[in-house]
Figure (cartoon, one colour):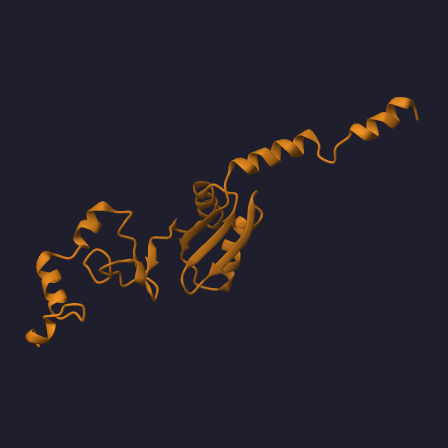
Length: 160
C-alpha cells in the first residue's frame, strides 16, 4: 500500500456518485399518497395489484383494500406512473380514486354527487368536476326551508 492509498481512505465517502444522483432524484419528488380505484374480486387480484407496485422506485408503503376496491401507495412517486404501472401489469381498469368522505361535501344527496357504486361513507368528489359542482349546490328555496326549521333560527318555533 502506498501513501496515496492511505490518504484516499480519508477522502472516500460512503456514498458513490451514482447513489448521490439517485438521492437527488428522490429528493425532487415529494412524499405523496396516491389513491387508485381498481376492481378486485378475490385475494389473488389483491395480491397481483400489490405486487405490481411494491417494487417500484420510491414506494415506501402499499395498502390494498379489496372491499373498497382501493389501492393506496405512499412514497416519492409520480401518480401518473403508478396509475400506468398498475394498468399495464394487472390489465385491469384503473382510475384515480374519485370519492371523498361523506362529511366533506355540503349536499351529499345532490344529483351529481350521490353514487350508488360508491363505498359506504363515500360520495363523488364534486370539486374535481365543475359541471357537477354547480348541480350540487343548494338552491335559494332549499336554503330557506332548511333554515326555517333550524335550531339556529330564533323564529323557528313560530313556524312549528
